[in-house]
Image 1 (tube, one colour):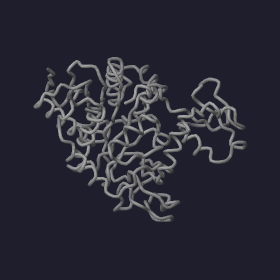
Image 2 (tube, one colour):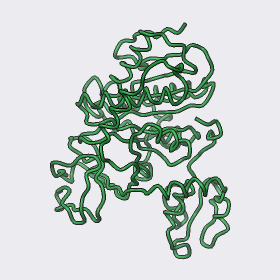
Image 3 (cartoon, helix red, strand yellow):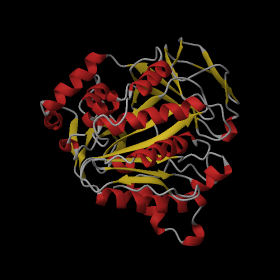
Image 4 (cartoon, helix red, strand yellow):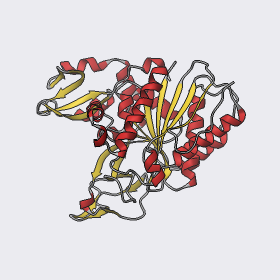
Amino acid sequence: MSTAVALPTETRQIGCWDTGQPGPTLFVLAGIHGNEPAGVKACERVFARLEEQQPAVRGRFVALRGNRQALAEQCRFLARDLNRGWGHEAVERLRKLAEDERSPEDIEQLELLEKFVEVERSAAGPLLFVDLHTSSAEGSPFLCLADTIDNRRVGMSTGVPIILGIEETIEGASLEWFADRGIAGFAVEGGQHDSEEAIDNHEAVLWGLLNRLGILPEGFMDLTPHRERLVRAVGAAPAIVEIVHREVISPEDEFRMEPGYENFSPVAKGQLLATARHGEIRSPNACHVMLPLYQAQGDDGFFLARRVRGFWLWLAKWLRAMHLTGVLPLMPGIRRDPNDRDTLLVNEKVARWFVVEVFHLLGFRKATRKQGRLAFRRRNSRRENRRL
């Protein structure tokens, strides 16, 4: 029979439920931003029920606290955003820092890296990583994910709206570490920081995922109340949107978001969104506002997103099933990066029409510019054949 040890608040591990039976691993990170404790509280609720009812799960459920020091201080971070710097090069630089050069977040990240590696190496089946967040604005919960087939399939099963493309605008989020290893994963934005609803939403998503992955024994619990909760929380929000703009800010900008915006708020072209030292910031197109900033810390003023129609998702799945990615390097203006087989370089003067859209459909993300060309990197999917 499994045992779940109640751990002190300051410990890294929130809990681990594992009966020794092989199966999938649901690996959760909560509180990577210290002003977002809802995910931690939701995990504690789930582990409390597991402890009470002692189910013989198949696989395991592991949850960690992210930025423990910032959680104690109830602030987003102390020295730097812990949800940045998870790319390969940044991690290598971090490992080379002398101890007296490390910030509080550097120390947190190094400890988390050890745990990440430990969980990955010990996984006896498919592994799903989930990063729990909240936002300073109210509105529907949603998922942020890279558009791999596994991510999309599992993400859509939650019943929560999906945002695509945010990983192209934010470099070095914790999801990147797992994506580089072909591990499925996504972030869950549960709601407003201080709301009880955000805890409820996170808990509902966790129970749904434990059931979807087959970790819970059949008939362990009635998920209907959790599903109904998410339906109410989502309301009329679109099912899938794609990020088209990120408003990057710094303290010197004196950025101030206009009041009243929520996640998925529709805005018209030219509508006033915010003000800053340089003047008014208005929407360039009709779209939806995501993650409007109503807190002191943070370098994202807001995001803008457009609705993605179901046809394009179906087309993307069909194109990938046909393995058409191998055709791209044969097309005019496109060649493979000689130093990275997963990256394609595009000469925009030759390949001019719907370049970003086509690459997104085939599972690539816009990375950066290399050798004077636009670089697209294939979203790693080495583990997709393990079928979450």
